[in-house]
Length: 107
Image (cartoon, rainbow, N blue to C red):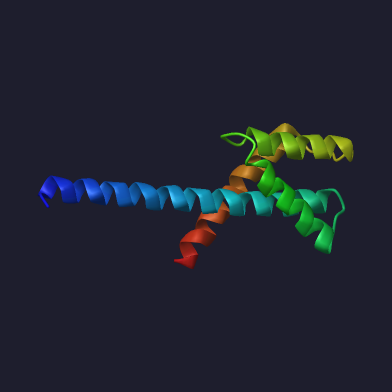
């Protein structure tokens, strides 16, 4: 195997590893976000866990975060939870940072 081939293989492995970490961090972020939203809606215990799973599943609708945002926004509107779009997006960003930290700590 030439040096170029080894380098290419290294880049491919790093890309796959980074993609896996991003997927895991996003799923964990969505679970944390779902638990936060559940608390805001007054859900506890098993209900909160079940709701968090629906948030994780909502992320499979399309690429990006808008499907998760729309789910939380719609559920908050239906339950008359007073949270701004900015607050929801800020929580999404904060939970992503926490999720990345947790994933990196699991290594």
